[in-house]
Length: 158
Image (cartoon, rainbow, N blue to C red):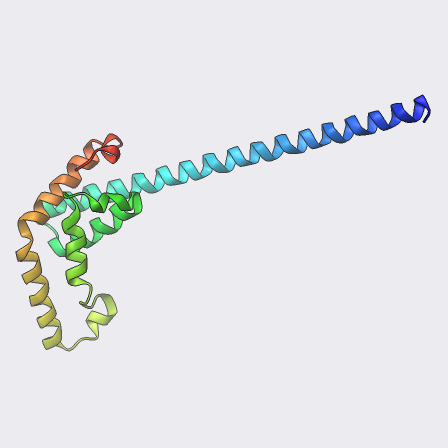
């Protein structure tokens, strides 16, 4: 093999390696950009959930909203932030309320019920709410504390 051919092949090899390095670097930058976007998106979602949690829990404590409805909404929002939060003793009542009211109709299905059926379901909701009233109010207050101490409260046990 002549020296000229070897030199040409070396230059081609170096050009290919350089092109691959540039391509790898651009892929690495794209991965970083997407990771940052996901982090920002998760942060925005958490901020929105926390804001909603704060409003709902405050309304529950001041009895401006139906406690059962507030509990169901809090459960969903806590689940979005971190499903493990619902395992905490302070938030477990939200899961209990969800389980005990899961069979009841909502939205358009509720509207389709006959008035008597709707009244019977309302009585069940009120009974469940009365059985867990103090625990629901305590959980709402715990949500307010959780929100106030965010993000350290995410790692705290309770």
